Image (cartoon, rainbow, N blue to C red; front, side, top):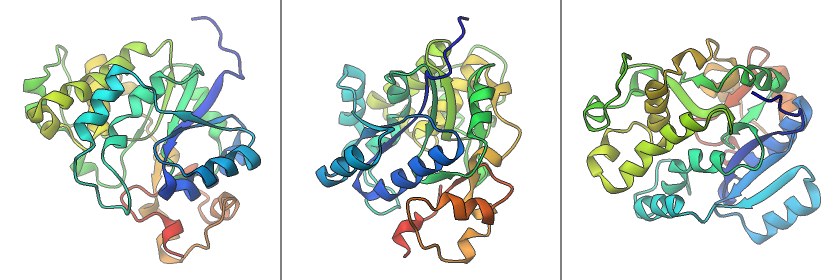
Length: 277
């Protein structure tokens, strides 16, 4: 593989108006840990928020969701589904992750949900990416993570694997968009099948996360799941739920002092903290 320039790397996410405070804090936490561009696919930002980004966030680029046949299929299939628990959160953006990663104009890409904050060592994630894609363990509800057994009857995998593993959380993952094309294609495949087959849709666990599990199993990438929780630590494993947070864009500095054993803290499965103040 040809060496990739150090500047050909970025963080990518998606965001709407409800998660804009999370996008701001993600941006500041990137700049404090390992300054790289942040690319945000727009799934409902307001004009005022986009104006703020243009004036105040020089390394944050807002991109339109790709207008491709595959993306249109996903939006059409899932836009009428009932919203999930968090206020204002819709279903269809939850299935878009692999399509957005594949459309990213950078080569070395780390996907991060915008309900998380980087505390330290972002550069180490990029270092790990040099050897292959990077996946992070689920540590909120690992017992609820596996796909339903029916998925493997509907979408068979022709290699030995354990259906109950890997136990991953799709909120943080790392990719070389050229080297890892086969894995990204496998990530997209169950989602595209789910657009038209309700049995496949019902058998996939947790939207795109179950599709990523299937892709890892399909391509034999289980060894690329990190053996540490540090790079995608659920907030329930910190003391942050015990004390209210006064949320502000640069809160990563305070959080790094309060949570010394995590590199990334993720509010997955919990109400986002900027709505609690």
